[in-house]
Image 1 (cartoon, rainbow, N blue to C red):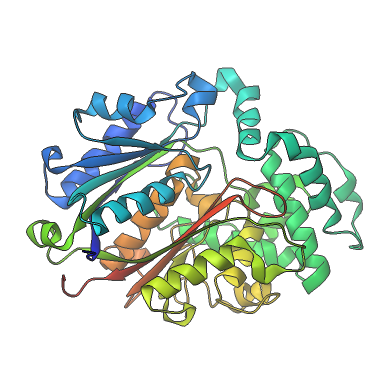
Image 2: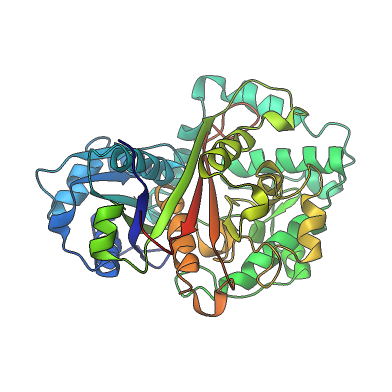
Length: 418
């Protein structure tokens, strides 16, 4: 017997550099907040998913990360599952938790995403850790294929300058940006428009890592990372955690009859071998189609979206992949103001990854938390008026020309529980 599934509690830490806090401590802060939000004790939790990517590489905690962090909190005896799916870790954990509740295996479960990325004494390892999220055997071949995507695009002199230390993912995003610029005429200014919009949004988010607005001109004048990407178009290294309480309808009625949010659909995909121009085969397009089909809605029904903008160009790509506009029209859509708070389809009202922050294993859960707050009409000055359907798109890793994994989640404000 299948049943509807709801989110009844959410919580997160502020995002930033938490040099004085461990993964266990960050997890505890988020869990405390989620349990308080749900109005329940930890004894209600029947199973948990713990999502993290960095403890193995940076702390040597390669296994049983969830058992370590959650037992420290007081969870003993319950099933605990560890989910590492690169940046899509906690959205993948949410999908598994959703499936367990929908199948009737559990009534109340917990999803925790927690990450520490900042270890000042291990700076080289901090950057090397990114390389674990693509196929190490094929890395050189994949990078060569990515770099050829923008062939034919006239490059300015600064595009030939090595700007120094950076995540390898910024080279990947730069290659994708050059392809989009060459094929569709997207401009660096349009990419900067995304970043300026999200930095403006983040001033309304008290938990964001950066809370200062930036103009398009300031974004363009910022330090070059790899052309056409400047520093303020990139997600920072972030520490933080988020927790989500997922339940059956019966449990939601006992806990949060008026503040529950329904998980209406989740679509998951991994990449495939395709040509760069075969954009309709992008794994995000496939995941979005699966989520829309499960939810019984389309992109036109979405009130507010959180998209995986680890670099500003990614928001443009995923607006197109999620069906919010035709391929090639993403840059113009951002310039039009449609995706800004107050527009027809606000995107990344939280500030997005490159302003709010991007603690990799927690990012998907944070996106969902932000949407839950919106759908409850509890977002304060960042509230999207009348928000009813929220959509989160969360990509993870890279393989070939695109991300290795993608999870798209559709949420709905629940006027009644069934």
